[in-house]
Length: 115
Image: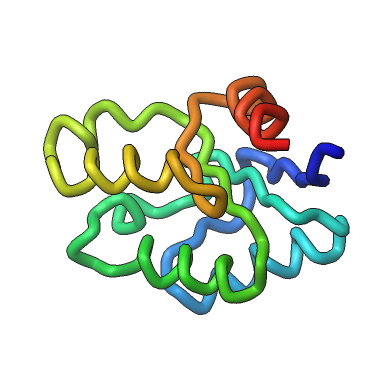
């Protein structure tokens, strides 16, 4: 059985601080989704800088509430600038809580492969 997911619109409030994750989680819950697919446009540039700890805090919050988080978009520039970010993406994509994928199609394929 495929997990239910909700795809957020690319236009809307941007997650800029850890507290904003509550609004994103609420959107998942209101759509009865076990996964939330978030276009990168909805995330601040700080989200992709591991030194801000925003990504880790948000990922932990989603994991605590047992909601998967898929970040949709291209991440080549961040990966080229930071080996730590590149390693983080590679490691999380091997698990079942946080994924970085190119688009909704790639996310659905990965989700279906897990089930």
